[in-house]
Length: 202
Image (cartoon, rainbow, N blue to C red; front, side, top):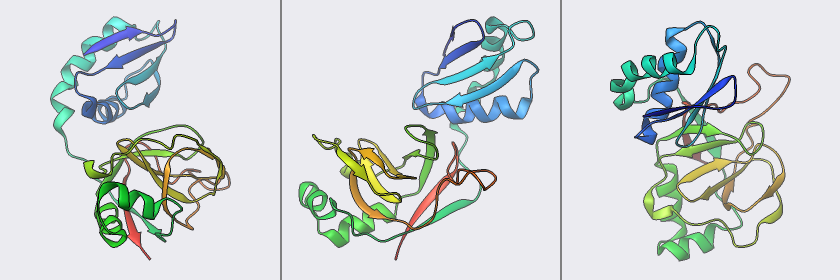
């Protein structure tokens, strides 16, 4: 893997296998090394914020080399179940594009065992991997100016849920009434990197 300086107080970790990002994140958190201030996973990389006087980038690279066997560790933990009303604006169009009925599409999407790979775009928005390859479709050519909060959608290799109303170009399959981000709740976000998710048709 590559471990590259990222400014004066961080390192960008690039594993050879993108599936190693979350296990590496978990391993670093479990070790509790002094000098690590934050670990932020992304799709294929991981940002590690450092106190360089305590843990220089070169030493971090040495530590991560020992964690490489964890790249095949399976996901564990509880599963967050999200009730979904499959009535999205793009449901019929997606079904037609992938050559199946609406009911077949709903079954295919809801049968998936998903994991939050990383978060971004807006607070509480998780990029979930585990989407069946038959549903890997590009974003809409023209994004919508407003997507309703709770919209369940797909784009590329990911599925996700819009935690609040915002512009977006993902294809809408349905919606959930479960609030995914609330500042008055601890933690505010239901979805975080490593969390497993299952969609339950209503």
